[in-house]
Image 1 (cartoon, one colour):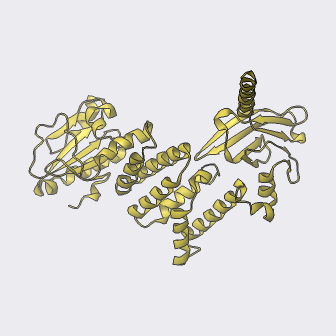
Image 2 (tube, rainbow, N blue to C red):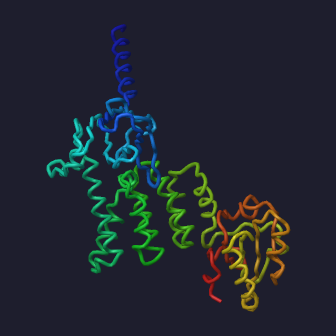
Length: 384
C-alpha cells in the first residue's frame, strides 16, 4: 500500500512538473547587444506583448511563455529598436534562434525551418502551423485578387466563397496576423447581408477555441453595427446566443445579446413615458442623442417626412439619450410629433436598456400590436 502511495505521489509530481514547465525560446542577436526588444503574439486584431526589455551583453534573451499564453500556435514578432522585425512561429517547441544579417539559424524548430526555408518535405506535414499559415496566406491572396478585379472569373469567386464557408479555419486565422485582412475582405465578398450572415455562421460553427469564438463574435458585432446591417445582425447574433458558448457576454456582445431579443416578429417592450401604447397603425421609434451628427441629420429627415408618415398612419416616438436639458430642448424644439421621450439618463435610461440600444441613430418599426417589423439606422430604409 505504501509503495502504491509513493508511485501515485511520484506520478503527480511528474505531471505537475510538466504542467509548470513553460515553453522557452532562446534568441541571440549579437550585434544588438544591450538594445531594447519586444516579443509579441497575435490575437485577432490585437498584439499581446508578452516580454520586453534589453538584450544582455551577448545580445541574448530567453523568452518564457506565460501560463495564459500556454498552447499558443501562431505568429510571434520579435522587434529590436531600429532593426528589421523577425517573424517566428510558436507551436509548443522549445527552440533557439540566432539572428543576424543572414538567414536566421534555428535549433529544434521544424516549424521555423518550414516557415523560413519553405522546405517542401516539411510543409507537407499538416500538423505544422507553418503549413496552415501558407494555406491561409494563399487564400488571402486569392481573396484580394477577386475583390480587386484582377480575377474576374465566376469560378474563382465561387472557390473563394466556398473555401470560406467550408474550410476557413478561424482558430488558425486568429493568430496569423491576417485576421483583419481576411475578415474585412469577406464583408466585401458577398452580394447581400443574408449570404454574408450564413457564411459567418458556418465559420463560427467550426471554431474550437472559446477565445477565438468570442473574438470573432465581437468583431462581427462591431462590423454589423458599423455598416448598419440589421438583416445580418438578426441572423448572426441569435445564432451566437443559441449556441450557448458565451454565457456571460460583456461590452458590445452584451448590448448585442440584448438587442437580439428584438428580432423581427418579437414583441417590443413598453416605452416608459409613452402616453398611449395602443395605436391602430404602425409606430416608428427613433433612438437618438443630440450630440451626434448622424442623429441630427436623421432628426431633420424625420421632421421633413412627418407629413408622409402621418398620412400612412405611422406614429413617431422619439427617445433621446441626452443628459443636458438645454441641449435636448434645442434639439427637439422644431419636431411636429408629440411623443418625445427623454429621462436624462443617457444610454442607461430604461428605454435604451430595454431595447438594447448601444449606438444611435437606431429606428424600430413596430406593428399595431407592438411587434418588431424591422430595425434600421437610416430613415431611407423605410418605404415612404
